[in-house]
Length: 99
Image (cartoon, rainbow, N blue to C red; front, side, top):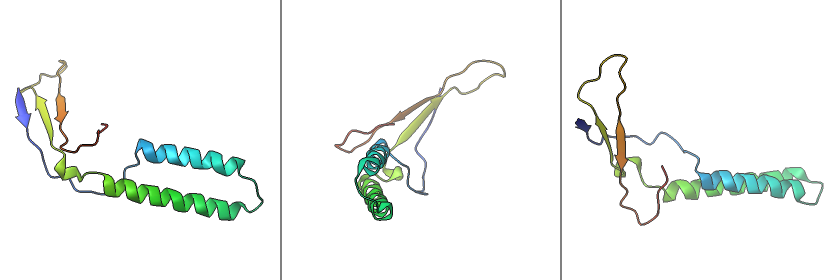
């Protein structure tokens, strides 16, 4: 089996997390049940809160280059034969990471 080490990864944009999706779902429900006729103001407030949560989430996330990923694969694979590849990742953060 061959092992390929970590490679440089550039941060190309924001990847939504489960936390951000949960906040968006809760905010949309809150907007539906909120009393009042001025939907525009509530919509702007909810969108502002979502942007704020997304920015905080992005700032708390580790840089992609700081999370090592190691790929293990067979040295050779025949055509029409099954093979397996395994990815292993470790994170030095004290927070739990979801992959």
